[in-house]
Image (cartoon, rainbow, N blue to C red):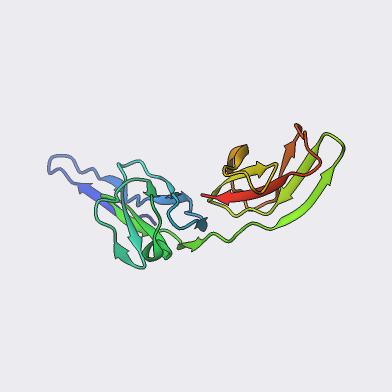
Length: 179
């Protein structure tokens, strides 16, 4: 039996008006993320309610001042940011606390495989959910600058394959930069 938010009884004619109490329901929980130190990351939650929703993000159980939106964005991640996050979603009828989501430091990706022909090269590496990956190359280790091969690859938690279809040298050096 639902709880009642309001009851109205009139003297001349007796009738009862009942409306159900409807606290929010979280439909999508925040997910664990990884970030490189100095990088950016976001957490998000989705909730439903017939009433307006309010949000309050928490880090290790303590409210984060001013973090009152459905999405929490952290920029320039520092050691204090590698913690557990949750969000309290509320409306006039109640509140619900999300599941915890943990921010961990991103680890250096592992090269899983490479394949090449005379003019093509395919590099496959591990990713984590959260960071952004850039693949860079040099034709000579004495070059002062790395050149971008692929940029803005979102980590999915699954391996990513990046082709290099412009091999011009017998030897090329690659690195994966985590943001």
